[in-house]
Amino acid sequence: MHARRTHGGSEALEAFTEIMGRKHVLTSARATAPYATGDRFGAGEVLAVLRPGSLVDMWRALQVCVDHDLIVITQAANTGLTGGSGPGDQDYDRDIVILSTLRIDQIHLLHDAREAICLPGSTLFALEETLAQHGREPHSVIGSTSIGATVVGGIANNSGGTQIRKGPAYTEQAIFARVDEHGKIQLVNHLGIDLGSDPTHILDRLQRGEWEAADVTPPPPDSTGTAYADHVRQLAGTPARFNADPTFLHEASGCAGKLMVFAVRTRTFPLEKDKATFYIGTDRPADLEGLRRTFLAADAPLPFSGEYMSAHAFDLAVTYGKDTYVSLKHAGSRTLVRMFALKGWANGVFSKVPGLGPSVADAISQKLFALVPEKIPPRLVEHRNRYAHHLLLVVSGNQRAATAQLLEGFFAAPEHEGAFFECDAEEAQSATLIRFGVASAASRFFVMHRSEASAMVTFDVALRRDDEDWLEVLPPQIADQLLESVYFGHFFCHVLHQDHVAKKGVDPVALKKEMTALLVDRGAAVPAEHNFGRIYPAPDPMVEHFRRLDPLNMFNAGVGKTSAKKGWA
Image 1 (tube, rainbow, N blue to C red):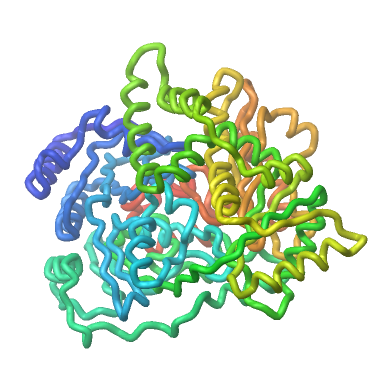
Image 2 (image 1 turned 135 degrees about the horizontal axis):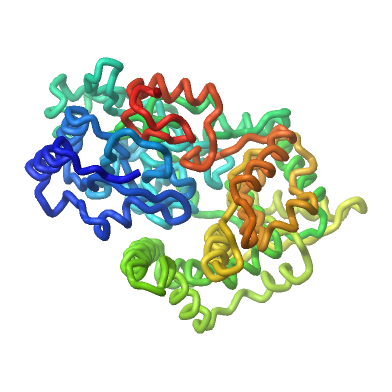
């Protein structure tokens, strides 16, 4: 798709400039590339990238887009995991405008920080920092929080993350714009806050946090989890959570960008500072599944998280995720966010230089961090050398003794093999960061072996809750087409991330289709938590859901490999 720069497009650019100033209306290929290119998937040309500084400017820019028949992609962090936050290779019939929300990042706390109003550019990391001062924490506390993902983005995509007690990011309280079948913009305020009736006044008051306590509905009962904790305990023949699950689809929640969301109201949770981390190893996947079922059946609170990675994933993270691991450990999330932004900018610049290509910054980072000495705690290394499968288990501090007793009893049984230890502070931090580093390891491997590889073939899969053979074993005719494979995920939820790198000459589209069929035959659902983006075809119920939200197909047209044509033609 090529940006056509029609007469109507030129008029739209002038109107955008009047609204937010020339500095925040980007039109050159170099300026728009970081927004129009996903880190993993998705790329295309756009008419413009808009960077409004207020909700009112967002609203006014949307009106211009409607008046000039433009497709709108509302974008936050542009993580690019499935390509849904930017344009793809669909057959678009209109010009595209990306509206970046990152400048609009206010967070307003309600009811002694038991709830938060998060504007579209507010990040999970900022929310975590803000809530910590009040002894509270957000829904997500690891993972995308470290690469700048936003609260609204997580809710719009049903992001799940590590939190066993909390389940997918979800709210029924949001304020958003939709365009109806007659082309009229509607502002829908379901925040539970009376802000008046005029759209610009509502949005202005919202951004400034201007309301009275009497205008706000009461908060839900306080707790350390949600109803999902009971749901995930049930060993049913269906996945615990996945993007097409109607249980977690409500207006902004799971909308996949088919609405323009201005803010969400989300509950927060008590921050438990006293936590115990156990590192578990075994050579038998069946033993990990047995352990999972033992915890799910126990008459005790669920662990906070139970994260799986293979020994091979451990190795890849240490080698190819080292910049992530070291940066988080010694500089923190804020620095890593800046590094990702700098890397994206540098790759964009170098990609224009003949002979260098689009991944020079990745290659430089890989070689530089390879020189940085970093000692992995000895007990982690010992377990990596002894066992093929690893589980990182985090529980409440007051469950420390009971958890150790359960694990001792489990591995003392003659039918089970494996071992565990309780981590000290350094071991817990290192294990967590290695597990996080796995998420970027396959992508970096692909970059460093591009001459031998055709593409990445990734899966974000929700297995049946009762699936005993949870670890995939690929048939030889598929495994022979892969240069690399890495398995990791949110084990207690049976949500796994399976990242593969296809060999040179392999058709990645055909291969993914064949591999998807194997998963579906097992009763699994894809995607689980990264949403459909540009790589997963949305099932018919999701397509109808998208149609109801966006009848003219104006927002994020083509998401879920749906039609990119106006009116879903």
